Length: 104
Image 1 (spheres, rainbow, N blue to C red):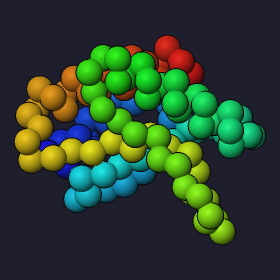
Image 2: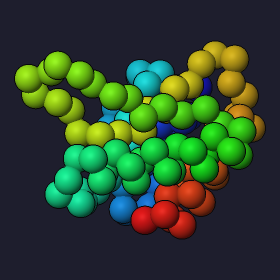
Image 3: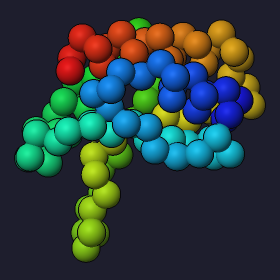
Image 4: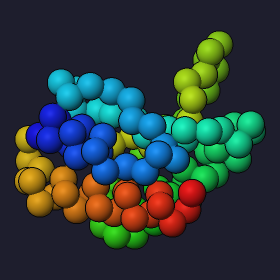
């Protein structure tokens, strides 16, 4: 399922975002291709996308990091598990693609 999720996201997501991770990992991150220049604004954009994807029934996370010397760029974290079907994964990819295309 990890490879399927990664491959579908990589081939489907719009160019306004970048995919980070690997096919072997159940976790991957979606980041803005071009930052607004303000971390808070970037996080707000991602939170808006997360909320819209959640409203479509798919759980994704915008992680928050505190007290780190070097903070990673803001992202939307997606996760695949062995319980997800190909249909679940396709639905998530479709929801993410539609919302990202609308918001960015």
